[in-house]
Every structure is written in C-alpha cells, then in structure tokens.
Image (tube, rainbow, N blue to C red):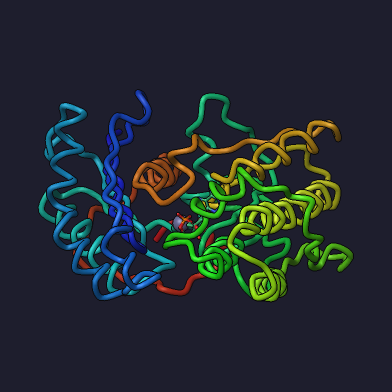
Length: 339
Ligand code: KG4
Ligand code: ZN
C-alpha cells in the first residue's frame, strides 16, 4: 500500500511517500523559517499562503524522487490538527480533492500522533507499550502508549511548552527565530553549572511540567549580565530543562511500570537532552528511543506513516467523499482513531 503524507500544520510544508512493504520511499520539506524570521515568530496568514505555493510542486517532487506516479497512490494521509487553521486547511483541501479525483481514501491524522510514532521509523523501532515524551513548540506532555490509537495522558505543561520556553529564552538572548536550535548552538560553548536556575515542578509528585518561571529567571540574569555571559546562561537553561525532563521521564516509567521511553517533537532534537536521557535511563535499566534527527521536527513522513498504520488496521476505509473537517485544537487523549 502506497500512502502519500501531507503535513502543513505550521511553518513547514512536508510531503512523503510511505510504502507498507518497502518503508519510506521519499520525503521533501519546505521550511518557512526565512519567511517568518523578520517577525520573530510564525505569521499565520503568511504561512497559509506559502503552503499554497509549495504544496503541489513538493508532491510532484516527492513522487519523482520515488519514481512513482499519482495513479499508483492507494491513500492520502494529511494533518487534520492541531495547528494553524488556515495552514491546516491548505493540506486538508489538497489531500481530500486529490483523493476524490483519484477515487482513493483520504485520512486526517493527529499531528502529535505523527510525532509520537516517528521513532518507529528509525532503525531500531521500539515495541509497544512505551511512555512517549512529546516536546514540541506547542506541546509538552507524557503519554502512555499501549498501541496505535491507545494514548493516555499522564501529565503535561501547566504553562509554556518546552519548545516555546526555548524560543522565548532564545529571544531574550538576542537569538533569531526559531530559538531552540540557535540556543542549543550557543550553549555548546557555555558552562551549564555557572548559574543555578530553578528546576520547576521537580517535587510536584505528578507528571506535570512548568517552564515559564525558568524563562523569567533567565530574563533577570540577562538584565544583570553581559552578552559574553550568554553562552553560560544558555547552557544553564538547557541543563535545567534536561534535568526536569529526565527526572519526570524516570518517574513516568516508574508510575506506568513501562521500561521504554520514546522522545518525539522538535525539542527531541536537542543534543544535551538526548545524551542525558540516554545515560540516565540506561543506568536505571530502561531504554530510550528517538526519531532519526531530521524527523524530530515537523515532516510529512510521520504523517504518511501514522496514516499507513491506521489504514492497515482499517482496510475497508471508504474513498474520499470530498467533505472534511480540520481541528485546530485537538487533544490526543480524546483521539482514538484517525478521522
Ligand atoms: O515539533 P516541532 O517541529 O513543531 C511543533 O509541532 O511545534 O517543534 C518545534 C520546536 C521549536 O520550539 C524549536 O525551537 C524546538 O522545537 N527545537 C529545539 C531544537 N530543535 C528544534 N529545541 C531545543 N533544541 C533543539 N535542537
Ligand atoms: Zn510538530
């Protein structure tokens, strides 16, 4: 079964072709970073218009890369939410109309499900059940994953998402959007022990997270220090986030009795977090799985893959009727199947 995946929930147009026999055949991505950089964040209307411009050429590019044609597609999976409404509408309308024309099924996929299943696209895919740590620009949560569509929320951020904290802190340090990777690069030359930043919610007894206080602590440091100190501030900030996430990850494994953690979402690309989680979990006899680095941030491959797994479970899915809904706000724990 050949599935075309379309991701357009935010500032990346991602297209991929996944074959249930042969695996990932091709994927292409257009990032809008340059488009939004001057504004310090994503401008929704600009994002939608850019998806409109990029999506069809990227679909053809992906097909060509895999040496396939439109008529060979068996289904189309697209991100139906959560995300920016206008951006989601572009992917959904292209997917549904193409599927209608080709007389094949179209399947709306939850963006976070795409992220949390993306480590299964790696070379050593983890087996169910596992705890997923989803850390992206909009979400930070622990989920117990017992199978496809079986997701139980264990805890989540009560304020900023981890990626949001990285982005806002990076802005305080004068770094450009998106801040996460830039802050991480700055931190490489810094001393993570120089500033004792708070470890929020460490003793809360639950699996919730909080990052807004950390950002406030950094803003105070920035006021009383010089740019030459910024690498140390960045490293200390990164260390605080990694400490909290490691501590809570171990707690999540203990609470659920599971032995495997799967990390997904853009912040999962952070090298310090990856190294620390790997070392600390291994010490406890648990394992940790990450998506391949390039699949940590938004991409079409994770959507094609999640769609293919749902289609395998529901082989009788009807072909597109042309009508569809998008879900800009959508909880993964309310979600039992693709729409
Ligand atoms: O999953 P993602 O691509 O998009 C969302 O669905 O939000 O995550 C984007 C977030 C941004 O906040 C970005 O700054 C952060 O992931 N990010 C990182 C790194 N790479 C991306 N944060 C820390 N370290 C990184 N290396
Ligand atoms: Zn994402």
